[in-house]
Length: 119
Image (cartoon, helix red, strand yellow):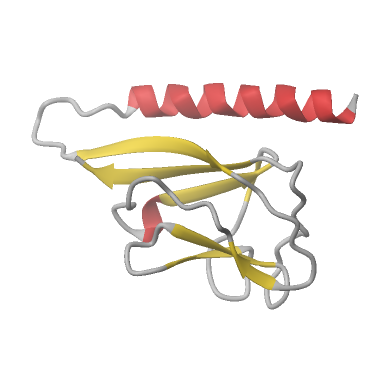
């Protein structure tokens, strides 16, 4: 039952996020940014900082335009918090369960990343 509730929560979150993406679609007035969302594969991470093996398919515009949800709960970005974006193109998520405030991650968790890209 718990996993069924998580799936329902995640589907609801994806719908809300998709509605936000649709509402922010470029208007044709020179707006060259777009918003996308994708789900990353989660890993078992306990008491350590770890960069996820799965990466974003497209480089985000910048770190400020990225929002990460774990099981539908928004996570805080930055050193000593829940996660950081790493790599030259900011396409990797580093989970801070050792040095930060991130909760432990399990392979059954859902990680949704919403971010701006340049089109």
